[in-house]
Length: 377
Ligand SMILES: [Zn+2]
Image (cartoon, rainbow, N blue to C red):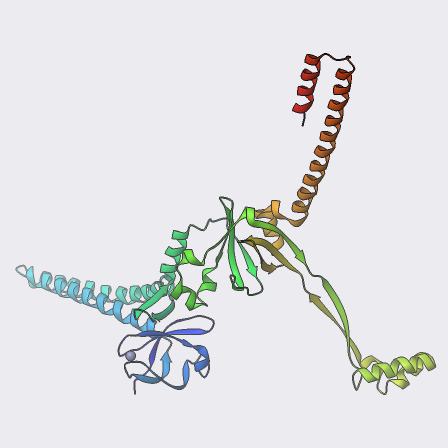
């Protein structure tokens, strides 16, 4: 049985580990562990190569980095130390004192370099871990390739995507087919409302990374297709009464006693002291912000936190429910007004035609007037 598996990184529900024998990496569900902090498997974990162990070494990357850098720097130092010593001897044609001094300088510089290398090694392993942390690691089942997503790779992908620096962050509440709950970037670009999950959220869904490129995760909605956004729900407070000995019944007892014998009766009726009846103020908040839009003629909704309403007002103010309905109402009024004026004009033309028939207006005058009126429609 092997010593342990190496720990590479983790998400909310998965742990990325590496087999120390065949270097195969895989994502294992945290459910399989006794507890995720001690990283011990409930049952023995077996790699495809046959390597098995109960444990996962949390410090695997740290130790790996430390060893690698330490070995390289030690070799460089050792080489410098030798060069220093040889130089000392090479110049030994002069007096014995000078030879001794130069030798000492050679040895001394070697010692100083070893000391500083230990310090640099320590620093470098810290930076290495912070700068290029493995966020997610798993095997692509189709081509059996190991895929590791480090902070660096994801940062590069973010740059490729060109999420503008002024992109806001909103929180999607309920799960729908297209949108997973969590934090998403949101921005308006070239008449499209774009949504993209925060990297911290993506790493919780290794499947997203396996199956999709970042471009595929990005959601774009044409602003034209957005019907409106609005909020619904309310905040209400409930006064919960508890305690008083025997729960609800004693409260009723107190009330009945109170009705019969006044305040003193309330104490008698409640079996226990009145002050043991406690009331608790519970706040319920059912508010949420909703975006409605049409996707191939079908109405879709995105459910957001109530607080995101303000963000939407900043990004797509023209799609606020009141604005949309006000525009719609005004368009209806404008249409009605236009219909009214058209009616008035046709009536005026009719009157002019009568005047012409009665010989009051000449043919040319009628045509001229008619033309002017028709232009107004
Ligand atoms: Zn293996």
